[in-house]
Length: 610
Image (cartoon, rainbow, N blue to C red; front, top):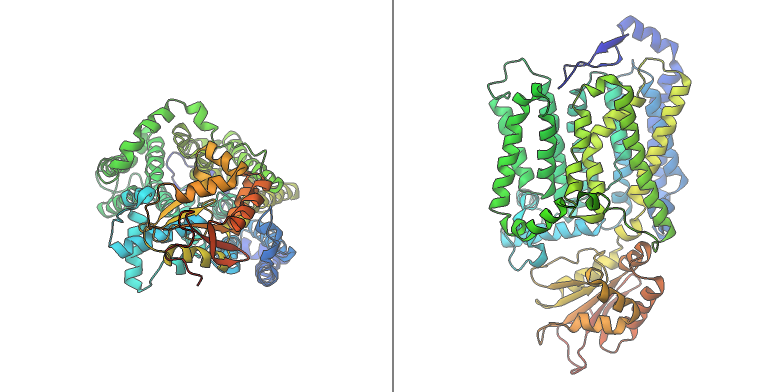
């Protein structure tokens, strides 16, 4: 017997089983003691295996497949036990809802806390960059002068200003202390908006928690690090969830605009925070609200929110962010004129990449395609979901593909924004619709969940040879950015280093991997000329230049195929034997060289060996 879901934005879909009568619940509890004990014991067993895995992980085994090669079998056993326990809980509807909640929290912790607990330094170079921006804004009390290419953060400072305010309020000196835990914090905070969103569509708790599990089991994109994107995405999902929830309150006394004043004011604050923090998320928010407003019955509720998003985004882009918008408007219009090319720009050629990275990339694509196909199957097979706005939310991210200015990232960003809808649709297809689903259905669901979780691990952990940094690498970059004179030029092979942007307002940073193709070819064929040119070109007299080479930079070149392996070895050899380069800090994982101009081989400013 089925019960209608809550009045949603478009329909009252029949979802799942009715809540069991207390007597029936008691009888069922006695009828299936093994299920109850499986659910009770699987979670602590999984936690025990995970803790054991953390103690036996060897980071020196990280290779082409990243952390997947370093994690011991106990880690994968922990995830297998956790998945089995969660599936058993889904098939045991009389258990308290908190059991499912603890399983979801455990999944989030196993995936997102593991790097934070294993790595001695902050993970991911972009997270280091954003820590540097917070530090600079804290030092300058706001806008950072002489920011160079990082001036874009002066035009969308919301995330950084919020963290600077947090540091002042807590007395902390740097965001580095908590940035390592940001992926775990962001994903735990996201759990609230996701629950609000999914509960606005159904009252079947098993479907809700299955959708939550699927969201976290397929969120492989890795945009949860310390960044404006992660911050704005959390707010985006919150705005969409509040809007969807409000649609369930139609017919109640909610004011002439479809909102109570307090609720609408909260939405305006959230939208303003999004508009001031990130370039893409406001566009995605406008697109999602626009598709939600397509059904006439939704417009009284959605149009006021859409109007706020349009006005606040346009006002910000026309004032604070005007320099960036004006400089990039032509490129955006050009991109809009070629949507077919933009939609496939993210499919990079991987012929020269390491075999493990090629495998991981294809698994990422297979995972993405599988999730989207399962969501499409749900639209075709579950008639009630077609009467909701979920299919529209699934299509909303297409606007990002039509204006692809981020090349390889855009397909995956579009997938990320579509993920709440795809997770719920997939859950509608896979979640048990009866208290006792047949074994074949349970086995099929278990197979799909396990395969998707495996895809998550490949997407999230396979690039850790580049994303994690040793203390020696952090010390080398810290020396180059804090112990060299202001105005120094710092040259790196790639941007994959921990904190190359520290004090970016006082140094000039050159990344050789970002050079023109002709210059990159020169680096591969004649590294001596390429390095000398980069270190000497345009540098004022008396201001020194430094070359920083780290383990992660070299790994990035090899794994991504940016440079042939032989060329990477030749660059290392050339730097070590070039008479104009003097090592001022050296360790097994990093070397800092000071450039000594040939005209004055004995000169050099600010570069003694520490």
